[in-house]
Length: 137
Image (tube, rainbow, N blue to C red; front, side, top):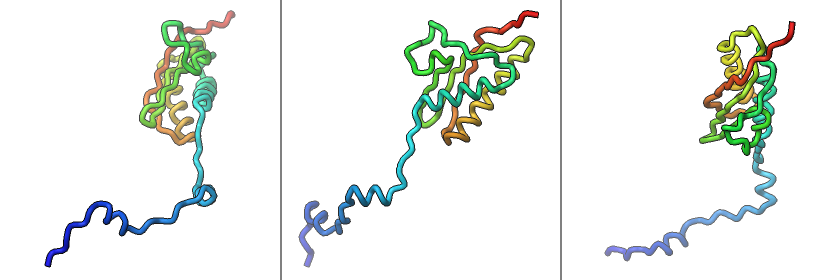
């Protein structure tokens, strides 16, 4: 003899319910979370860029680009999309340097620093050379 079909409510009532987790249990058993402020990423990118040989200083983001973003005064615009960090760095180079080589070194160093220090993946790192610093002789 066939048994009558069970309703969804009856199926749910037969499942074992796990005991509720109290806030204290969650606090003790969980590893916790780490949050990183965007200013930390900006500081890492700025210091790493300034440590690269051939870079004189950072240049504030030009007026044609949105200045209302965090880090624009430091010459950096960072975006985080799909767990990837993307950076636009506005720099002033020293005189008599290979700008292409210095730009590649900045890209490599910033990628490595953010990846190693924060553990985030880095997408594009765009270098905008805004000026060249000439020292008087």
